[in-house]
Structures are given as structure tokens and as C-alpha cells.
Length: 109
Image 1 (cartoon, rainbow, N blue to C red):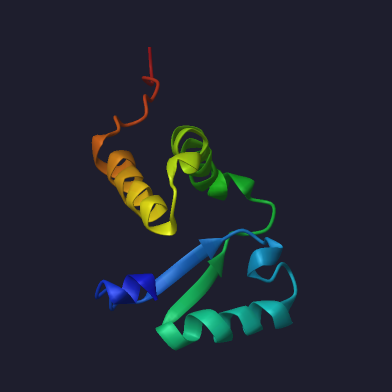
Image 2: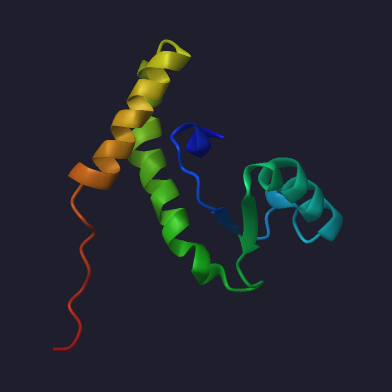
């Protein structure tokens, strides 16, 4: 709904692992979650192939960066929900625009 409130009209696909928060490996839960939350907004759920944890590596790395560079140092500074949302919006900008790209090793030799 947040995306829709900013006029994002195209299909929205959530790519996840097989975690219980998205139904785990129970097809009934997956269908219930999808029909209840995603289908009304034109959304869909896609999941990584089982046993392919590497598919989720970048997401997990960004979560770690969020934890270390945003939540740990700034979360307790927010005195209200509004202040937290302002800090979070600033963090998204810092992460996506101001933060230098990760250093990648040079290939070859």
C-alpha cells in the first residue's frame, strides 16, 4: 500500500526465501498470505529455489548494513514514530545516493 500511495502502479513482486513469515513450505499458508495481502494490490510472491541461499546474499548484506549503520546508532534517538520515519527516510537516501558503492576486488592479475 505504501508503494501504491506514491503512484507505483505496475506489478510489485516480492522475492523471498522460504521463511515462515511468508508461509514457509506450507502451500496453504503461502496461498493465504498471497491472496490476503498481495493479490488485492496486484502483487505477487516469488521465492528463491530451495537450498540456494546465495540468492539472498545481497538482501542479507543490506539488512546487516541497515542494522549496523542505521538501527544501532540512530534508533533510540527517535522520540516518536514521526521522528523515526524521518530518520528512516534520510537513511534510505544516504544508503541509495550518498553512501559509496561497495569495494569489489579486481579480477585477473
